[in-house]
Each structure stands twice: as C-alpha cells, then as structure tokens.
Image 1 (cartoon, rainbow, N blue to C red):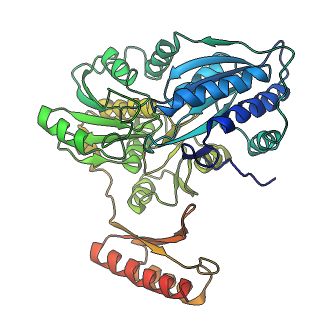
Image 2: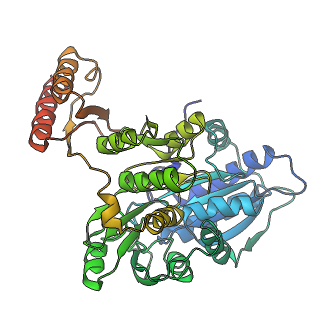
Image 3: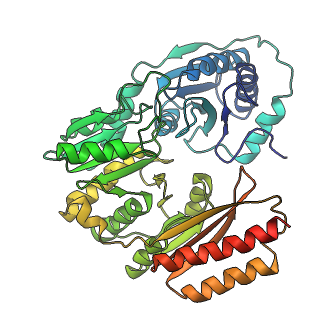
Length: 448
C-alpha cells in the first residue's frame, strides 16, 4: 500500500500545512489507537506513551493525540519533554504497546512531526504504518470504554539512570571538563545531569528552551557557539546534541568539529581493542571514504546503507552487527539500546577516550578524513538522468581518474528536483574539478 503521510522517519512538515494540523493529529491518535490496540494481545486496555521535544506546537499536538487515543479506548502515558531515544526506552520499560514522539528533530521550531516506536522500542514496521494510514479514513466513534491519561512524573530520572547504566560499574568522568550544547531541545534537563553525576565538570549552553529557540544557532547542526565556548573555557572537549537528542557531535579542545564518521570510528576501534572485537560497522552512502579506508586498515568490515537511520538499522540486523550510523552523528549501538541515542553514543566515545588514555584530538588523528565536494544540480526533470550514457561516461571517467583513492556518488534528493553530485578523494583540487565536470554533464542532460 502506498503511504501518503509516513516517510522514512515518520510524519514531518511545517505546522499548519499538509498533515501537520491539530485536526489531523486528532484523527491520527484515533487511527493509531484502533490499529495498535487491535494488533496487541493484551489483558485490559492498550497503553501508549507520548513524549515531545521543546517546540511550542508540541503542547497542541500532544493534546490532540491524547484525545484521539483516549477516544479509541487507549490509556495514555504523558512523558513531557524527553529525547526521542528516551521514549523508545520508556516504551519498553512500561510494557506499552507503542510510543509516540512529537518532534521535528534538527528542524526549526516552525516544523513538527510524529514518529512511532513499537512495544520493543524499534521503529514501527511499514505494514503497521500502512494500517494506520488506512484507518485515518475511518469515521471516529467514541469507544464504549474510554481510555485514561496519566503523567509519568519520574520519566526523567528513569532515563538518566538508564544512560548512566550504559557505562561499566564504577565508570567515572572525574577530572574531565566538558561543555554541553543541548540545542534548547529535549536533552536540556537530562544531559547535564547524566554527565555531572558521572563526575565530569559540566558547563551547559542551549539549556533555556522557550518553545521558539530549539536548534536556533546551536546544537549539532550549528556548533559554532560550542566550538567557541570550548576554546574560551579551556575545556577538554564539547558535546552537541540536536533538538530531539538522537544525534551527537563532538568538539575537541582546539575547537575542531568531530563528526559522526569519526565518532563511529573511535567506538569501533575501542571495541576492537578493549571489548573483544568489532564484528562490523554500517555507514551510509554519504560516509566519508577515509572512514571506510581506516576501518579496512584495521580489518573491521564495513557496509554502506541508503541514507536514513531506518536503512542503517536494517543492514545492521541483516549483517548481525551492533554498530552503525551516519555522518550527521546519528549513531546506533544495538547492544546498548534500540535506536540512535545522542547521550549514550557520547558515553561510548568518552569510554574510548578514557581507555585509550589519549585526548580526543589525538584519537581523531587515527583516521584521515578525505576531502569531499558536493554540488546540488537543480533540474527541469530528473527522469532518466542517472541512466543517461553521457552521465555514466562522466562518472566512469572520474572513477578511473581517482582509481582506489576516492569515489563518486550521484544521489537524487528526496524532497527537491535536485541531483546531488558528490566526489571524494585525497587531492582536494582534483575532487572539486571532477565534481564540477560531472555536474556540468548532469545539468546539460537534465535540462534538455
């Protein structure tokens, strides 16, 4: 069944447009309650948890979803502002049938969205999302046995302890001076406590959400303030989360940004050297080629999935591996939790720093990031462009020029009439020239 509303990462858009309206959320809550309740063999009523990030529209959508679920006869647990991975964890902890996240992740406050987790804390299967879409067309009927709502007051404390328990017994961050950027998002009242309770000296920024400033010039997508704060305070490192807390970036003591590929590499080699081995790592089509080469040098298997955490997880499960992620800092450690978790991923990196006995800037030098150049080519039509003989010839020529020292990737945008031309290699000027050459051919073919 073709899905009208659900994308690869739930439902997302600008508030007041398309599906992102209170009326739609009311109907979505009812549809989800009918489908998820019917799909579970349980005693008594179904139970679904709702959490959100700090954007102002979350209050409105929380109330609408709650009303729809209650009308479908489902009990609702309200978590308040919580990171997306916390909702996945708490859904498992409370043996709920599902968890609902109200968030648009790293997007500005004007956007919002909905993401579902199943009872085991993983993404809902496609077929269940399709059932919910179909149920949106059903007329709403008040259940004979209405659901009830309750607020889970100890949700924050439960999740803080879960994060701390992901580290070894007696593990300590004592002596470490760090700056946290919580993006004025869902980690604002959680991350500082996790790291300070583990013994670190913590200075926090991006911890004053007002509903409008989430991801505004802060967080993992805009780390400039964090970079400045780390240098000015003489901190050992900085850590930045995105608005819903499932992504993480680091900054070393010199203010240099350490991205998701580099963080994955550190976690992988730490597991290989200290934790009995690393079976393999899943990256994406956009993962830096230097990351792949560095893993190959250490005999750690590597595979590329399509861009998106859903596809990364699918390949991890297929290969039987427990580590994967994206350059954006969305890192998944399935031996610890079920989904990408910025705080837990950060703790995995800090374990590597501690066990190797080297600073973050020293460890980051163990992997060489290759120059990467991307050009977005806007086209009148993308139909047949990637299969065109001239485009294939241009790509083949670039690949032969790079030999084994780089790669070429052409990828259509999922939301715009663009084709993204990306070239990586050891020679930066050559990389830029090859990308420009291919982009010129793509533009000519696509705008005929």
